[in-house]
Image (cartoon, rainbow, N blue to C red):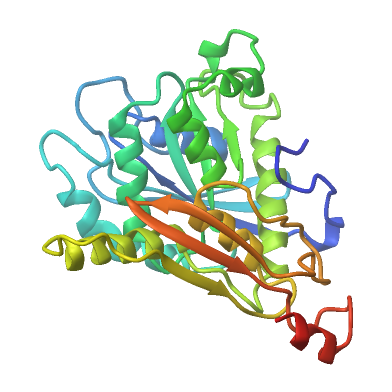
Length: 311
């Protein structure tokens, strides 16, 4: 089973990683520990309904699932009433060390329901803690799937507010939903593994030209620009950005990320989709921006001289 925005073709069995690591990240009470137990198929992490966090430090556990070794790292929740961000930040070195081992997926755990400002802020704070990790390593894991009561998750998310829609778009619609109260053999973990396989295969294909955590870079840059210009009474000139690079490295997708909407055609492949330079405008963090997408170097749609003339 696949999911929107991701190629649903299954990799060959012998190409699937025999070990997969998962890091559970999210605010206090989102269901990280319960989700870890669901993934492993056994109760390893303490998980109880309550007003305070049960996880005060990182805990790691391992299990064999369908012949594959799964490792799960449970982490302290953000915004705990006793420790705030202190526990989470103090455990970040352990989290980063774990995420660098083997094939790792970072799961942003969110309770299914109304998407609050606290949820949005938790995602922002988590991403800021991983400035060097590409967004392609993150997946949203919704908990409380039992509340859907048979309603397809796609239908529920289709009616979600604009803020959640924007977050889903940011992560390429990579998401999964858990009912942590259901039968552990109902297939939801195997579906998660299939989605993880797709992500890891895509990550392997793009490893030569890794895409940075562009959203964080953009936000930091524009906030810096705003601070520089806050004493300037004149209207600043539009910021002009020109995207250059080899065909297939993600220029058009990066342009869409900068503008926050799909303006440039972006498809996975080795040949250049962009054959002519295109310019689009937008407003990012209150600043007018012009983005120019250009044909990729070394694409197979024309000779080098022709590409140079177009550029």
